[in-house]
Structures are given as structure tokens and as C-alpha cells.
Image 1 (cartoon, helix red, strand yellow):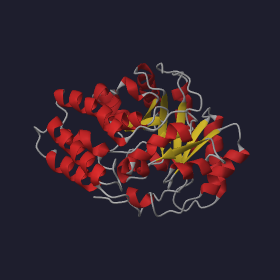
Image 2 (cartoon, one colour; image 1 turned 135 degrees about the vertical axis):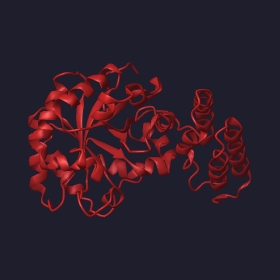
Image 3 (cartoon, helix red, strand yellow; image 1 turned 90 degrees about the vertical axis):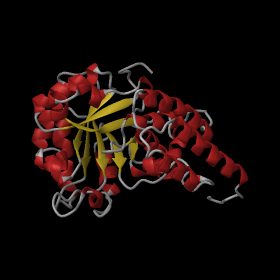
Image 4 (cartoon, one colour; image 1 turned 180 degrees about the vertical axis):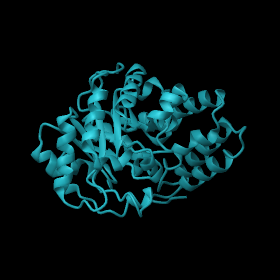
Length: 339
């Protein structure tokens, strides 16, 4: 796929931007599992890009396309500068975070607290769109704090859409800006899928993707009866192998899913290259820990990788030992056993 290409059905299925998780190593694994899922970076703040190490924040592998950069910020001109950086670096989309409820993010005046300032979000989107040709999208919630009705959510979407945004990824929970931790905000507020379905039904010209509480490809298929796209979050890193079904089930590609053994063979090259570059093994194996979730040998696989990676000099010998151990136990375990 060429850089910055127009991708048909780009938002049909994506993996959520997740802080401390969806780094380039995680994205490399996810791309091995699915050729077509849209992948997102961790959120990068405008300050980090404008005053920090741009290459460290924006570097990615060419195999990761389609890949989107998520930005955190609230200053239209700063966001415009960063959107231009995203385009220059070859990202396929730039996304504005209007959903994160953490105190640190609020103190920077971005994330979910921006739902209280829809006109400002519109100004941010307009400024970004003025300088790039790639899509500018918004990831948001269905509300904040005591906003329990549909109408404030509808008004937010309309204001930002009037500013030019055509693509919204909606986490179908509201966010409490005070009193709940980011983790609690992912679980405690009730899911309001009906709000997301309704905004799509009433605004058919907009592209609407849904996020929040989705655990499987089957659930994703059910949501796609009502909206344009599905974004999977924690399930994608807790049980990454489910992504192997995405291309056939969601995008209709007539290809058999890769086996876990094939995935490990392909990812091994990434580990080899990164170890030569000095990347610690611990960072490289973290995305793999759920690959054998519920499978024979899964616990042994996780233990060998986790314990072996504590040594900063550890390399492919640890990786290969874990792969051999899970292969051996998979071959000898009785059906349905998880060793």
C-alpha cells in the first residue's frame, strides 16, 4: 500500500490508540496478524512533537500502513503544525484525542475535557484540515460528567462536523473528569451503544466508528450492522490472535489466517533487527504475551519470555526457547488443555 493512499473502508476495523501499549512493536505484531486493520499510535502531545524528539515519537515501520497518528492538544496552530508533521512523515490519518479523562491530560487542556468546548474542537479540526490532505478525525466519548442525555453529544458532533470533520470514532461511554481513574472510566460508566447507533442513523453522511467494551470479531460484526466501523481496544492486546480473523471476516479477503507459529516466525525478524539496534527484549516481547491466551503451552510461553527478558543482554535465545516450549506443549497437550 502506498503512503498516504486513499484506503477504501479504512475505518471499518481499527485497533485503538492505547497509552503505553500501541507502540511500533505492538503495531508490527498487529500488522502481521491483519493486513487491513487500521492501526493507531499512542497519543502524542503537541508539546512533545514541537519541543521534543520528533523521530522518537513519529518513527514507524513501512509495513505498518495503514497507520494513524493520534494527537493530544487544544491549540489550533500547534495542532496544525503537528498534523503537517504527520503528513510529512507519511501517516495515513491524523486523529485528535477528545476522549482521554486522565488528570494529566486535563491539566494540559485536552482529551475528554474538550467535549465541554465543541467550538474549540471545531477550530482545531479546521486548522489541521487547512494544512493537510490526509483525513483529520476525532476520537471522542458520548459525554462527560453529568451529561447523560443524547442531546449534548449530538450538539458536540454537529458543531465539530460543521467545522469539517467527517469521521468520528466514539467510545460509547461518557467520561467522569473527576472521581474516576482512567481505568475506571473504561469500565464503570455504562455503555451507550444506542447513542452511537442513533448519531449514525440521524447523520448518515458522517463516518461513525464505535469503540468500548467490544470483545470479539462476532461482536464487531453485530456493530457493523449499525455503524461504519469498529475500534477494538484492550481485547486486541490481551488476546491479539483474534486479529488474525479480521481480514477475512471484516474485510472479506479470501485468505486463511496465519497460525500462531507463522506469526512468531515473522515477528522473530523484528526482534532480531531491534535487538541489533539495542532495543531491550522486554519491550519487544510484551505484545506477544497474550498470543497463546487459553491455548496449550500459553502459561509456559509467557513465563519463559517474561523471566528471560529481565536480563538486558537477553536476545533471540530467550525468544527461541519460548517458541520451542510452546510448540512442544501444543503438540503433546490433550485437546482443550491449557498447559
